[in-house]
Length: 101
Figure 1 (cartoon, rainbow, N blue to C red):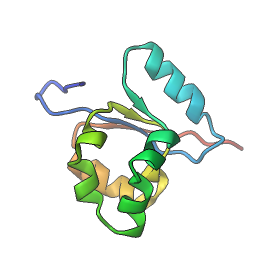
Figure 2 (tube, rainbow, N blue to C red):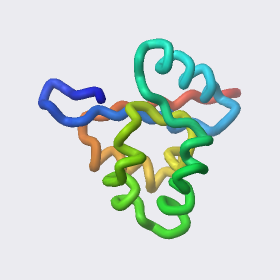
Figure 3 (cartoon, helix red, strand yellow):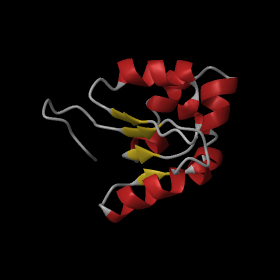
Figure 4 (cartoon, helix red, strand yellow):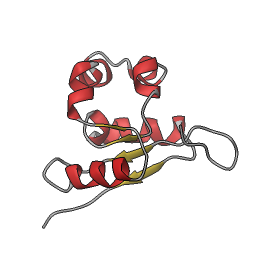
C-alpha cells in the first residue's frame, strides 16, 4: 500500500474515458509494483453498481476489496461527482486524465 508523506493512504485514479490509454496506465503501474484494479475487479466487486447506482460510495471506499488496490484504471472513477468525492476523501491522491482528440 502506498503512503503519502503524512502517512495517509495514497491512491491513483485514471479518470479518463475508456479507449484513452487505460490499459497502458494499468500496465505501467503493474510493472512498477502497484496493485492495479481494472474493469474486471470493478465488475467482480460490483463497484460500479454500488458507487453509481446505489449511491454507496463511502461504503465502497471503506470496503476491504477497494482498499487492497493502489491504482484504479477503469470503473466509476470517470464520473465527475465520484471524482469530486474521491478528491476530498483521499486528500493526497493523484488523478490522471488523458484526452484523445
